[in-house]
Length: 176
Image 1 (cartoon, helix red, strand yellow):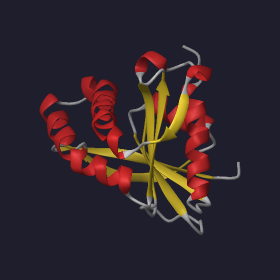
Image 2 (image 1 turned 180 degrees about the vertical axis):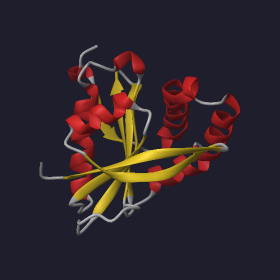
Image 3 (image 1 turned 30 degrees about the horizontal axis):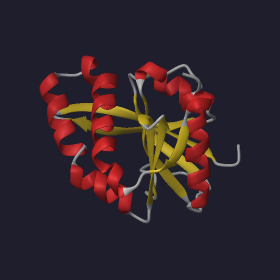
């Protein structure tokens, strides 16, 4: 697959179940081996629900972007109009809450194309900055975001099931 074989669009209400299944699967594939299985089960059950995914797809202050190849979901991102938990000198910052590419398609340029979609949607929401939280042990993710001009601005606690963890908070201006 090449990144050019992929189309991007806003998720629609009839996409809810497949986006939810993809979200759960990619999160577990990405972080499951490095976490306690019970903590992972608890987190997935709480954070990836049908109700939450339906709300995200329908909300005016949220954009769920999906990437498809011949109708098959290969990546997605969620951008929410949510303030940064750390001080940031920005008139309007929005959160990149989720950003996942199917492992089979990593390294194809798809993540870079999805990020361009995210930046466009964030700008359409009136944002001047985009921020995100990334697990401090996700070296690949941190490297990707650094390459996308995100700066590390601090850390916040994150709980996965019962496990206390730390997320690095990264932010960037949209006009870079």
